[in-house]
Structures are given as C-alpha cells and as structure tokens.
Length: 368
Image (cartoon, rainbow, N blue to C red; front, side):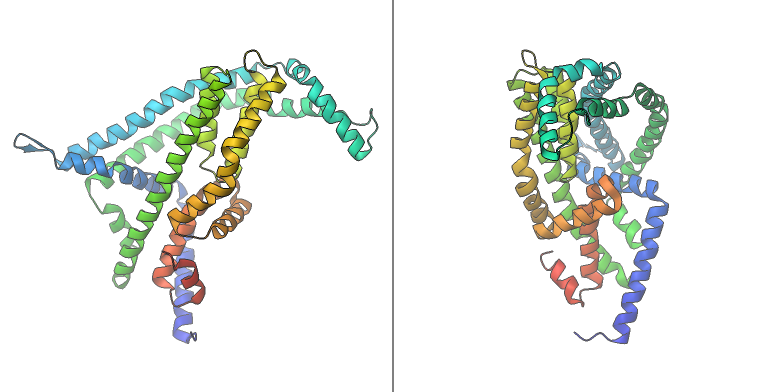
C-alpha cells in the first residue's frame, strides 16, 4: 500500500495523540491505577451483580445500587479473607528474619559451601586464602537481612497503611459506580475522543475487555493452582503447614510476573528453608527438596505453558510475547514485566482499529 500525504499526516496526528494520552496516564498514574483496578473488579463482580439485579423478593426487585453494594462487599470480603490467612504468616517470617543468627545458618550449610569453595578455587585457580565464599555470603546476607533494614520496614508500615486506606476507599467508590452504571467505563474512555471515532473506540474496548478478562482469569487460575500444588508438595515432604503455605503463597503471587517472578519466589523460598528447615532434615537437604520441587513444578510452566497460555489468551505468537516481556523488563524492571502483556494487548487492539492500513499492524493483529 502506497503511503499518501493524508495517511502520513493521520499517522503523525495519531502518534501525537497517543503520546499526549500516555503522558497524562503517566502524570496521573495513581488515579489511572485506581480506575483500572476498579474496572477489573467490576468485570470480576459483573456476574454476581447481574444475578442480584434480576432477583425479586416477592414483588420487590433489588435496586441496582443495593446489588452493586452487595457485590462490592462480597469482593472485599474475599480479598480480606485471603489477607487474614496470609498476612500473619508474612509478618511472622519477617520477625524471624530480624532475629536470625547468621553464624548458625552458615555453620549448618558449611559442608556444601566448602565444596563450592573448592570448586571455585580449582575453576579460577584462586589461592585457598585469597577468597572466602563463607565471608562473602555472610557479608551479603547481613546486607539483605539487616536489623536496621527490618526496623525501617516496620517504621514504613504506617505510611503504607495510610496509602492503602486511601487506595481502598478510592477503588471502592469507583468500583461501586462501575458496577451500578453499566458501560460507565466505556463512556469515560469514549468521551476523550471525537464523535467520529466512537465506533472504533467501542469495538476496541470490547476486544480489550474480552482479551484481558481471559488473560487475568487464566493467570489467576494458574497462580492459585500453583500455590496449592507447591503447598501440598512441601507438606508431603514434612514441612510445617505454616511454612508450606507461605512458600505456596510466595510462588503463587510471584507467578503473575512472567519469568522473573518465579525466580524471585524461589530465592525467597530457599531463604525460608535456611531459616526453618524441615523437621528431621538438615538445611542442605531442605534446600535440595525445595529446589527440586520448585524446578519440577515451575520449569515446564515457565518455558512452555506460560508462553502458550499468554499467546492463546491474548492472541499473539509466543515469541512475540517473550520479546515484549524482555523489552518491558529492560525498560521498567519487574513492574514492566508485570504490565507488559496487558499494555501490549491494549496497544495492538487500538492499532488494529486506527492503523490497520499499515502491513506491520495487520500482521501483528491478524489473530485479534
């Protein structure tokens, strides 16, 4: 297709508009996050909301405001239930780390460290007194598990609680109206654009809602199953229920971050194994059990199932998804990897609606 001056000007205008919108989204990022979280919660609660809104108690039909309020309360009750289960576990482990005796921990894994020391000395031809792996590990652990760091974390909890209260109130208020007034989110988005683009925006929002709903439901289901599988596996090896559930929680939560999340979750799980080894096992045996279990449960998932799952649910090639995640991670770290697939899905849908005359756009969006 030949690019005419009108097409080029349209592309420039579209790019300028997209840049302006992205700047506003960045500038008001906290408000945008509240709105997006509220929209997701509204999508999750939509089936219950519709069911309640059509219910009749004798001759009295439940008003949409009451149905929306009940749905919102159910959503927060479910979230509160999981928080009540796992937050005490998290804080107990933080307290345990703050009182950790690093010398005792190093002694418990002295033999594996000595073997690693000998291997490094032979591999790099380092004199025996030239480098101490034990001293390096102790120095690193003291930086990671520092009493002052733990105290700073606890002192920052007050600010976190205050911010969380504001976020919960704001999200609850917005979610209530998204539930009560069906189509309100779509109306807010279409109001930004000229009338002649309303049909394109409406189609794009419908596609985005469908694709992201499938993606979110899929990743949440996968994370929940992983949490249960890891917890049960750890329990089968004799780990205490609290520790097994904690490792399962960490792996399930970190699983929402592609590729990097499971690795970080695995490192945290190994720290827990060092601090509280399985009864009847040494620290080295506990670390071996945790490492092998997580590799078996996550190895196939990370490199085979996850790319396929993401690609099927957002209609993109697995390699395409992998490259997008790598680019987002290099630009914005863990947060970028977390938001890479949703953001890329939105960009593809809107590109299909407004720039389908370009061959590259058609190739990237042909499955949508």
